[in-house]
Image 1 (cartoon, rainbow, N blue to C red):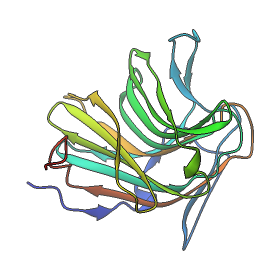
Image 2 (cartoon, one colour):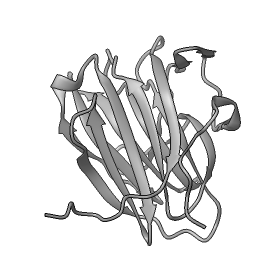
Image 3 (cartoon, rainbow, N blue to C red):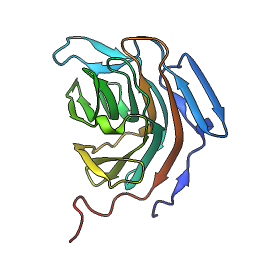
Length: 199
């Protein structure tokens, strides 16, 4: 059955780890991250962190998840975006992270161990960012955009799960207390029609 576009109520999700504070109002969801929250497995740093604040609901094949938030990051490794979880050792987080003083668009793909890719987007600071993860076939295609500008391809990652997959908005604050992320939209939509735009 084709996926029907729907807005996901904030109340539908379950937290992987409870944030320091959560508030909802007419403008959306405001999430305050705990100091030290993060998601990472082993590579380069030799630690496992699974303290991210991800608000997850069921994510079906041949559908897409979209999350919109205001980009207001201030300290090293502040981050927000989407989180797609197969299990504790298999997951993808994608969005914007403050790394070495500048906002960067990227993803961490974890299959036992994590990898990491980033591309600076300093002009996105203070603006509205939408991150989209489209699950079609055996892959998750991640795209993002700022305001109503064109979508940018972030990552194509393997996603060929037979177990239930969960997905939703997330944020982390590995180095400080006080990060509050303002999410305004969480939607499930049909997947992208194709990987590359047609001419």
